[in-house]
Length: 247
Length: 247
DNA sequence: TGCCTGTAATTACTCCGACAAATTGATGGT
DNA sequence: ACCATCAATTTGTCGGAGTAATTACAGGCA
Image (tube, rainbow over the protein chains, first blue to last red):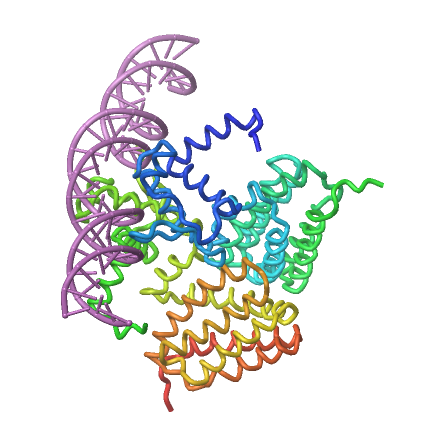
């Protein structure tokens, strides 16, 4: 729970970048999604809360506005600000997603996320195979090359992985898919950090990606669908396989 | 609690419910998603903007925080608050969705939304067929009865339609699907209002829903998938068929 | 010329203190 | 017992003042 020394500086930098109200929102947000504030629970009044946090009432109010915009809380005059029921949370909001997977790799939610990915990405790949334009192929190819030269163990490699999926989704031409997957991809990449640290991946994920790319380039929707389904399934296995069963 | 009609009074009530900062956020939000403020454009400074709107800087700032939380704008010191690129908008946020479809039934986005629904809902129905519990079946059955007694022309009927889909998604057991479809369903229901007004639906959508329900009750994933796919396809046809080609 | 550094100006950010509005719960009257 | 009214509490709104950060420009240096 104590933040390691290496992260203290990064924390401070992040806090400044988030502008106080943002960092307050983040702190309250993780407290909510991690269950420290339970649904239905009433937060402290604005005056006492802002006083306890040593910030002005305005800054605290802006933080609450952010959380309310993401469906985490609801404030009403006279009654106060209470934590919303989880079914009202905007789980696909990139910030909420990051707050969830930043500290709490909850098993159920992780499985649900991959289930969603398994539903959406194969179909997106099929659409991409039908609609992809030359620039999409170029972007995907660049990402594949970057994945080949780096690895998932380093930041650049994970970024390339994200870039590949992002380019593919863009090629699908559906604005909602683009909006959804950008945040989901970031959350998955975040969990990959832990995964790589605890139980480094042996299998090379590059061939799976190449197969998807080939199918998209060949304008074969069914093959793209199958290849992407296979990729996501394997990724889930990689993520959930028991830690370090060396043998 | 049916809203009698669009009235000035209802608007005023809604404004009060949104608490000024919420109504400002809504106004700015629709202005952005409708293109009146273009991506990359710089909004007026806080002082001039709040002065022009005749509100305090605090209220305006809270509105901007809401929009920033939904990815519509980005504000930085010294440069100001600028409209984000559309690919950064949180399109699946319920508020953003409602702002988009409240005034601008953009053809492309509507098709994209149904495409998303076509991807997600059949698979969700299949999952529901595997995981549904008695309470889910009861909720779906109640919704079907309500759909039968009312019609899509009245608010109660549309609500029942939404309830049916919501119950089915809940039965899928995937938290992210639940979070996504709640807002999507509301947006689609909103477009249905226009649709019903301009070109009333002849076909009775109830049998399609019943087929989905039967498949889920029978725990037949494939049948549920097919029935739901058929339902969504027909719904899109109903929505996009040429207006009033009576003959 | 080209790059680097320091500085100034602009803008959002934060704070403070006060009052208004709304809703709940109690209180009093019928 | 019921209804209307009032008071208290909490969020909502307001205005102004000062702070911090970032850009852009100017100047020095190679």
